[in-house]
Structures are given as structure tokens and as C-alpha cells.
Image (cartoon, rainbow, N blue to C red; front, side, top):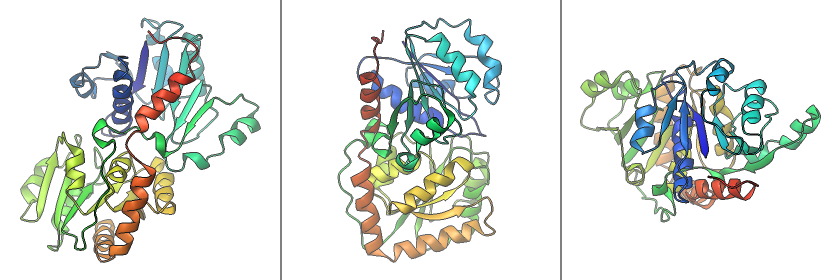
Length: 345
């Protein structure tokens, strides 16, 4: 059996759960159905609606060591596989989980390279993942290095983003998509609605945990289109000419569609991603919005500048689809299974 340990809430957003769902879907294509282990029930309905079983620990997602006694009541076998995706893991936590699956595999989805994770397989699909020197990190600590799965070719996207046709860039920009993440703790969407110019049609993606929904709906005008609970995200992204998004997992979906991208930082774990996307020619990076005095004005200026540079938009779009083709989750699980010695039940 394969178990996936991840969480989602207004503080950490939806990224961990969404990418784990994409990985789970790839396993399901091989008739393997993972079970999700969650700290609380805030993401349970989302997971269950995708027909995956859930186990709710009723614990605090921030203190994962404290949940370990609860694992004693789970029917985990020594030959099972556990995929962990959380920034709140500790060395002790991972060692204890590994002890439970001594003859199976423990896999960690990493973004931070925070310490030497005592796992069997380490995955970092981020644009900067290839450049992280894990070998040096582990060697300097005198710790055996796990099997590595690195780079954006393994980005776990939903099936709809597999093999998207090459984007033909329009000479004139009309539609702009803006995404501020699942919770939008800086209230950027509301500020955008209040201050937006009239030169483009703005498609605003309202996250599942955005606390400003009611006010945003009241303020929306002629050149604002609100999108919530989107089922066909690919069609929405393909319908726009420029996308603006925080440097989370949404960037990879935008890349798969070849839509010229402007990105920015809302959390510490997004800094390296935003810089890497910029360095690879995949996006314009506006930096950290948490310390920016006029973040909304900066976004609008960047949209105006990119809209007027047809050559740059074409270059970004081409680079995007060359690097990210949407088959990352499939590649990842094939790689994981190729590294596994014991059969998955």
C-alpha cells in the first residue's frame, strides 16, 4: 500500500495537497490507489471528492513529532510505501516513519534542502532542484544519500496538462490571468480589483481559502472576471495572453501551456523558485511582495511592459513548453517504482 502524508489550510495553502493528488492520479493510472493521511479535515473533502480514502489524525500540522504516537493505531505494514510532503518534518519524525516501513520505502517531496532527510528516495522537481548539491550536503554530514529524483521534468501536474499544443502568442495582449494562491494572506486580489486599470480584461483566480471573496465579488466590474473552483484549469490558462502568479505549483501548469509569465514571492519557500524561473528565462520575477511598498502597482507595470514586448513573450512561451510538458507525475512514479525492491500491494 502507498500512503501520502500532506496537509492544506489557509496558512500553508493548497500546494502540498494538490501536487500529492497529481502524484496519486499517476499511481491510479497503474491501478494503485494511495491513501491520504491528513492532520485535520480541512482538505479531506477535496481528497475524498477525487475518490481517495483519507485518514484524519486530528493533530496539529505544525508539530509532526507529536503525531507519531497516533501512527501506532494505523495499519501500516513494514512493506508499505509512504510519501511525505510537509515542511514541518524533523529528522526524528522521518526516522520513526522509516522504522515503520523498514522493508518498504519512505519518499520525501522536498523544496528546501533544510537538512539531510533520512529517507530512501528524495524528490525535488523545482526549477532550482537540479542545482542543489545534495551530494555535498549529505557527504559533509557523513550521512548516506538517498536516491534522488530532481528537476522540473518531474513536476507533478494534472493529467489535463499533458502534451499541451505549442502556444501561438498573440501580437496584442487582451486577457491577463492573476493568481494569488489558495489563501491570499496579503489580500492582493482585493487590492487588484480596487486599483486595476481598464487596459486589459483581468481574470482573477480566487483561491479556495481566500477570506475576501465577498468583497471581491462586490467590487468586480466590467473588466474583471472571477474564477473559483475551476475544474478545467488548462482551458482557463490557455484562454489568456499573460499570467501573473505567486511562485508556487501553479507556475508549472502555466509553463505547460506556454503562457508568458510574471511571478512573485509570497512565502520563503517561493524565493528560490521565483529566482530559478527568472534565470531559466521562464518568467519575469517581481521579487518578494511581503516587503514591497507598492506591490499592486509593480504588478500592473510589469504586465504593461511584457504586453508590449512580443519577442520576449514568444521567447518565454517557447522555453516554458520545452522544459515542462506535463508528464512529470508519470515520470516520477515510474522512477519511484523502478527504485523499489518490494512489490506494491
